[in-house]
Amino acid sequence: MSINQKNKIFNDVLNKLEKENSQTLYQTVYVDYKRFSLKNLPISLYRKIEILISDLWWNFGFKKERILIITLSFIFFFTICLQQKIEKYFKVYRFDSLKKRLRMSKYSSHFQTAIYRYLIALIYVTLIFFDLRINFDKLNFKYLCKSFIILFIYVFGKVCTAFIITYIITL
Image 1: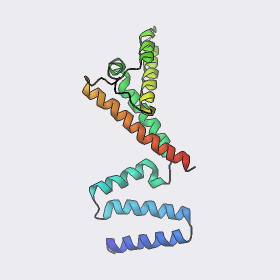
Image 2: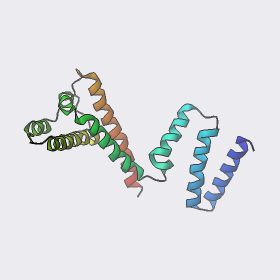
Image 3: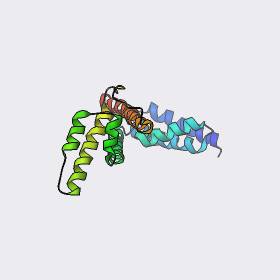
């Protein structure tokens, strides 16, 4: 059976399931069809990337709760990346009250200090991630690479926030 014939069968089955209002089966076949088209249909690289991201991100809209897990995962990932160099990131994008807290942390054990630094980094990343707008007056472009990392966290946070809002609206 050719790819075009399989594609037509998928479309016919999807149309039939949609008319019969069979949601669960429709979702299963739809996801299979998207994965089939990713592997077999002659579509552009951009479209393939879009399908792949949509599959991983929220299973083509059928598992919207995934975005919450992905958001938390990225916040923790960015926190771990910034934790060791948090003082340098304060030079790039300032949160004065957090910087003062970091200076005040003098613990006897390295473990306590590491936990405290992690919490400060977590708050720092979360503030950037969910900030409504970035204050470019606070952003120091002297550290260009770190500035772009801050901007990436901010933009990625806006994307996640938009998907979270969509998820909440469609509950």
